[in-house]
Length: 395
Image (cartoon, rainbow, N blue to C red; front, side):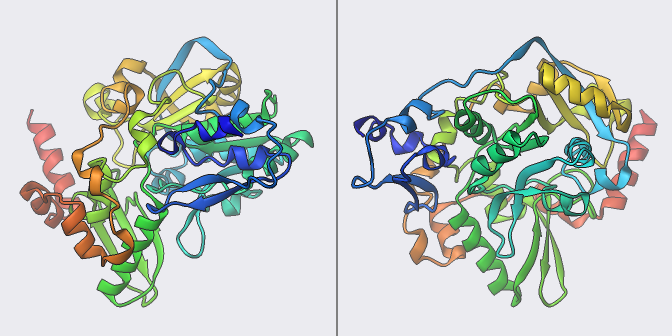
């Protein structure tokens, strides 16, 4: 089992592939002091087969049947309600609906009743709301690689969406290409720990004197497409929080709180693992102004022929325009390089268990609130929209 020990824990993504592939269940998943999960080997059970080492996507490259020239689109869902309920252009919903209509299963990230992010499977359109929207915290893949394999072996159509390292973990676990598997990865910045997010939720509950029953990182009701979270409390109150004025959100955007491996991400490039890559098409207003939509625009990157096939099957439900990878990369830097590790990360998780969240942020995750962000947050979205319209028409 020496090979397994050679994997530096700072290089582990926590995908759980090794745990699920182990033939004797000698690997258990434990939470480290920062709140990230990682594997631990039970030496008494281990038979030294080395399978975990041979399949680990961090130690081995995962092959993908990439098309010679990737296809890139700016796109949005023609169903306005689905678009509004999504983080950007609502393309994931279209792809998921196709799979569900064909009696397949869709795997993706959802918050459970305790607001813990987990990969789950759904079988109906009525459940799709669970998987919509960004969750800026590491999700637990649980047993979904094993579950997905059973579905695939039973000839069920499967769509699995996740971060690139999770897709790599799934493909390493399966160890072969399934024609009935479609994968979607995201242009990921990095992931904070579930422990940190839990501590943040507890802080909100203490501050507003009520239990948080729902949390959305990217809600469009107040400010349209952007970075405004919506928090619903048990007492019926709702808060909308600007990302740049929120301690958890802002430090996420500043790359202070990611898992160590995220700062050296092997997937932060255009050599994607999944069939389709989805992202926000930031900068679309400058690049293709007549295609801009205040309810969000997605960037779609088609990486494989399989991705191209399913895209063509749902294309009637998509408003789209051809683009190019260089335009998307301009404001999606994680298509070129990993997020940069700030010196603040050195103490980002020190003593996280023993400090109240407010004190913890003040001492460990110092960040500055910009005056312009405070002013913007006070101007209603309708007024901002009106001002932009006036400025646009005066040019």
